[in-house]
Image (cartoon, rainbow, N blue to C red):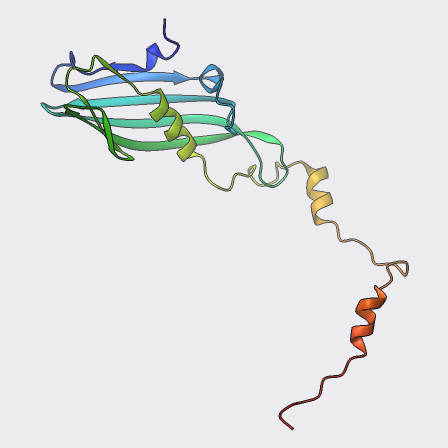
Length: 174
C-alpha cells in the first residue's frame, strides 16, 4: 500500500458538488523530509473540494502547531499555525502545472495526491521570524546575548590602527 494513500482524493469518479475531507497530520507525516526545519507537528487540515464539470477547487484550512527552533534562543518550541489556501485542479488532456496554485490533470485520472500541497501549505504558514512568546526564551542564552563585554587595559589597540590617529588630512577647500 502506498504510504500517502490516505492523502489521495478521487478525481474521475467524484460527483459534481462539494465534498469535505479531514486529514490529521502528525510527526509521521514529516518523516523523510530531510531538509525541513519541521520534523514534528500536529495539524488538522480540512479540505473542501468543489467539483465542477471541468475543474476542481480545493480549499485547504490548516489549524495546529509545529515544532520549530526559536530564532532568538535556538531552543525548539511549539508554534501555533493557522492558514487557508486554495488550489485549482483543471481537467484536461495532459498533466501540467500552469501556476503555483493551478495544475492540469488528465480527465480520466483516478485520484490526486494532496500530501505535497499540505506539506507546502504548512511550511508557508510558518512565519519567517519565529520566537517564543515574550519571556519564555532560555534565560541563560538571552543573558549571554545581551551581556556587554568589559573593556580592560589588556585590550590594547592594535598599533597599526593607533598610527592612523596621527594622520592629519589637509582641507582641500582652503
